[in-house]
Length: 421
Image 1 (cartoon, one colour):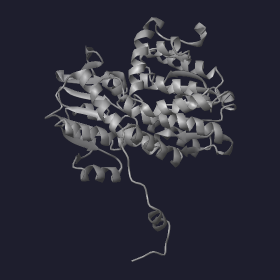
Image 2 (cartoon, one colour):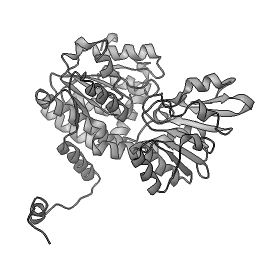
Image 3 (tube, rainbow, N blue to C red):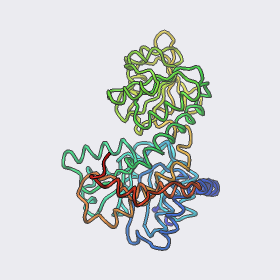
Image 4 (cartoon, rainbow, N blue to C red):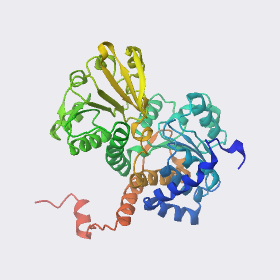
C-alpha cells in the first residue's frame, strides 16, 4: 500500500496487533460464519465502504469480513481516544486495509482522517456517532450523491440521523443498527455494563462495594451499568427525565431522584444519556470531596468539562486517564478519560463476544443496503427482522444452545382469530 493509503502511528506495531485481532476473532464466531459466506458469494464486490468506527480488534474483524465480501473498505476512527494503534497498524500491514487513525489524535487530524476515507468515493457508509454522515451532509454534499446508503451503530448517531430525517434533509437511507434487538440488548446492556466498569476500575482502582453510584440515564446502557454496579455491592441512584424509564428504575429496585439532589450523595457518577451537559456547574458545586465522574455516552458532551476547568484553581493528572480538579476550599473532583467514552478510552471497550453480534448486524445490514437500496426511502430504517432473528439463531448455535420450534398447530393458533375459550 502507498503511504497515502493510510495514516497510522507506527507499522512496526503490526505484529502485536495481529495477535490481538486473532484473539478477538476466536470469540466472534458469528462474524466468522458471515465471513466464510461472504468469501464465497462476494455480495459487496465492486462497492466501496467508508467506515467511521472505533478502531479496535473487534472492528478489525468486521473490516476483514467486509473485505472478504468483495468490498473496498477504508476505516477511520469515531473517537480519538478509542484507537488501538497496534490494531490499526496490523490492518494496514497484514490485511491491506486502508486505515486513517492515531490514538489521541487532535480534532483537526480526526476530521482530516474522515475526509481521507471519503476521498475514496464510498458507495456505502458505516458510522458510529454519525460524524462521517454529518460531513457528507455539510461540507461534502456533492459526494453524498454516489452514496446508496449506510448504517449507524449508536444511540447518539441514530438521534442525529432522525433529526436530519425530521427536517427532510437526510440524503440517503440509513439503517439503524443500534436499534436491532441483537445489538441494543446484547451490546448496550451487557457490553456497556461490563466495559464501563472495566474502564473505571483501570483508571481508579476504586472499591465499588459500599460506594454510592449515581447513573444518569436508564436506557439500555444505563440499565446495564446499574445492574453491574448493584452486583458489585454499590448503592445505586438513577436520574432520569423520562417518567416511563424513571418508574422502571424504581420497580427494578433503584433509588430515583433529580441530579441536583443526587449530586451531594454520589461517590461515583456515570453519564449514559446521549444528551449534553448532564453533569454541570450546579452539580459540581454540590459534589463531595473526592467524587469521581465518568462518561459512557458516545460523545464527550455529557459532562460540562469546560465549566469544571473554569471552576478549578489547579488541575493535574493523578493517574493515567484520571485528572484531579481542585475547587474552592480545596475540594477535589476526579474526571476520567477527559469526559470521553470511559470504556474505550481507559479500557478496551466491549468484549469481542458482545461485538460479534453488533458487527454481524453491521455486516448483514451492509449487504442488505447493497441489494435493496433502490427500493428504500431516504429515511432511518430498522434492521429487518429476518436479519435480527437470524443473528440470534447464529449466536445460539455457536454457543451450542438449542431452542424449541412452534408446531403447525401453534403457528395456526397464533395467526387465527376464531379460536377462543
